[in-house]
Image 1 (cartoon, each protein chain N blue to C red):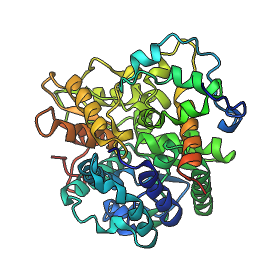
Image 2 (image 1 turned 60 degrees about the horizontal axis):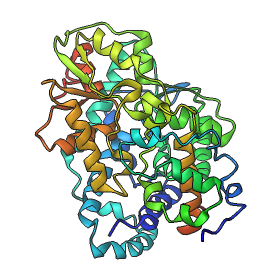
Image 3 (image 1 turned 180 degrees about the horizontal axis):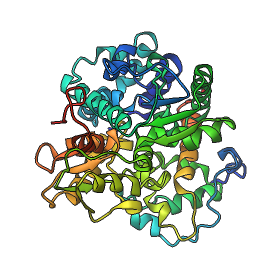
Length: 100
Length: 328
């Protein structure tokens, strides 16, 4: 059973924003990395507070090129690259002790 | 076994905090490109390299070494390497960086300075006071470290009385134009890429290129900074026929560079895919970012088209004389 952390979104600095995502899958189709989960399912996990699932996808989170090819083709104008960067910020601090 | 992210990113973070750059770059090396050009020190308008061109030969060398370690058990020792690096900068021991790569990066910066002069732009250079922008650390989401560094850069510019920056690569342009104001809340400096400046000013043509050039847009210029038309305008004015590849302008395809330090094999795959899209025209490919140039060139391994920095191509058309030699 998945564990939900209700405070997870707050720990993403309040700037994580994927509420407009309608799960159309265009981002996945455009992604040069051809990683299936990125980014729509990943964002769904984050918004649901499924912290363990997000932390289990660190390879995907760090493989993103931040190239924004998905973002310029997103019909809902979700700030995908910045969302990924914010997930890195969280993973880096919580798993790798990165930061000051 | 994938490369250990904690050690690789941690090394870059440690270096930025301790040494002011993700990989140590001596002042002598960072400023070598400007030797003999008599660029005034400081001023209100300065050419800001942000060290990306100067760092690329080192980054490329390090990426190759990391690629050799990928899936090796030696990666387990990289945490120890990070600890050692805190005491002694390990990259000082990177003696395999090719002199020709360093010279090529310097030549491109000289081309940019020459083009700006030819366009009648007056500018200075901060020499040893110039700092790296912190883009590699920002991309990895280490925001609080980036904020400390950005404040350092802002203070150095304030102290030097700089009001306008002319940048030379897309990453530094994006950091200084859009990320710093967001991170610092106050960054009262105008930032323009040299391509934007040249495109607006115009240049007297000396030798029309008279050949086709394929344009590879950088993701950051095209999708973060909307710098798309300027390089095309300059190439057309240089007498080139501009060829557009399958994915171009805002739909450009990444060179793989952003993940080369963590996933070198995947980065190589992405670069190869893009290089294939750019080949088949039978003419050189113009790049606008030192990361794109190195990744695409390395992926083709001498078999693809000639990849060249756009500044070196423009220098052929708009410059002459021994000080700004035609790039090979």
